[in-house]
Amino acid sequence: MVQRSDTADYRALFLNDAPLMDVRAPAEFSQGAFPNASSLPLLSDDERAQVGICYKQRGQAAAIELGHTLVSGAARRARLAQWLAFARRHPDGYLYCFRGGLRSRTVQQWLREAGTDYPLIEGGYKAMRRFLLEELERSVLRAALVLVSGRTGTGKTRVIARLARSVDLERLARHRGSSFGQLPQPQPAQIDFENGISIALMKLLACGDGPLYVEDEGRLIGRLYLPEVLRRQMQIAPMLVVEQSLAQRVDVVIDDYIIDLGRRYTALYGAAGPQRHAQKMLEDLARIRKRLGGERYREVGAAMASAFEEQRRSGSLAGHRQWVAALLRQYYDPMYDYQLSRRGGMCLFRGDRDAVVAWAQGAR
Image 1 (cartoon, rainbow, N blue to C red):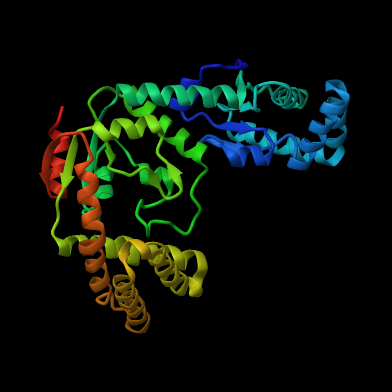
Image 2: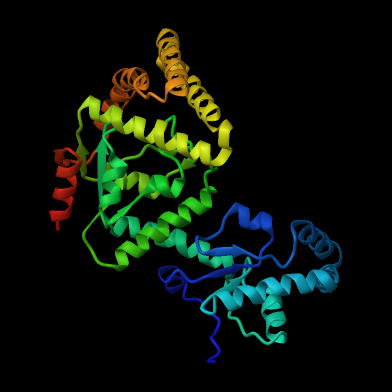
C-alpha cells in the first residue's frame, strides 16, 4: 500500500469531502468544526486544561510528560482503538489538531507504532478555517448571485431545492428563517454555518460559472448571522420573485410548520410531541407580541390555540388556516414589502414557483 503524504491542499480536502479525524478536545470541536470531521480527541477537556496549566507553570517538556501520563494504559488503548478504526473505515482520510502540531503528530506517531501510517493536515484547524474564510470572500465576490425572493409562504425554499446551482442557507442553518422557524434540533455553531456556506459555494464554483441562486434572507437565520460579505452582496443582487395566491401560501405554511414540524416533534418526543409542538408555536408567537400589537396578538393566539386543540381532537387542520392567513396578511406581508423596498438589485422575473424554476433553468 502506497503511503500517503501529509497535506496542505485544503481546497482538495473540501472539494473531495475527505474524511477528517479531529483530535482536538471536545470543547474545541463543539465551538467549530468541518462537515466531514469526526471528533476523536487525544485529550479530554479536563486533561487539556491540566496540560495547559502545566505548560504555563512548568514549560513544554513538563506539559508533554503530563499529557503522556494522563493518556496512558487503558485510556491510551481505548483512544488508539478508535483512531485505528477510523483509519480502517476511511483510508482516504486525514487527521488534524488545532495547529497541526504536537497533538496531531503524537496521534500520527502512535498510529504508526500500531502499524498504520495516516497523514495529517499541515497547519491544522486554524489554517483550514482561515482558508475557508478567505475562500468565502473570494467566492461571494466571484459568484453571479441571484436571490430567490417572495412573500412568506410562496415556497422559496422549494424553488431553491429544484435548482442545481443553489445554496440552501436555511438547510445549512437548520432553521426555516422566520420567527417560527426553529426546528427541534439545535442550530449549528456560527463557525460551522460559515464553513458550510464557504464549502458549498466553493463546490458550485468549481463546477463552472453561471447564476448561483440563494434564498432572500435577512441578517439573521434564527440565531445565526449571515457572513457580512455575503449579506452585502445579497443587498445588491438581482432577484427572481416568487408569487403565489394567499390560499396557496397558507397551504405551504401549514405543510411546513404544522404537518412537517409536527412530524419532527412526534419523531423526537413520541406521544408528548404534539403538545410540545403546539407550545413551541405559541411561544414563538409571544416573541413577536410587541410587533403584532396586543389586540392582534390575542386574536391570533386564541385562533392558534383553538386550531391545535381541534387538530388534537379530530385531526383536522382546517382551523389553522384562519390564524396563518391573518399572520401573512397583517404581519409578514407588510414586513416583506418593506424589506423588498430596501433591496438594491433589479427584478429579473416574477411568476409562480414553476415559472421561476423554468426561467432559472433556462438562464445562462
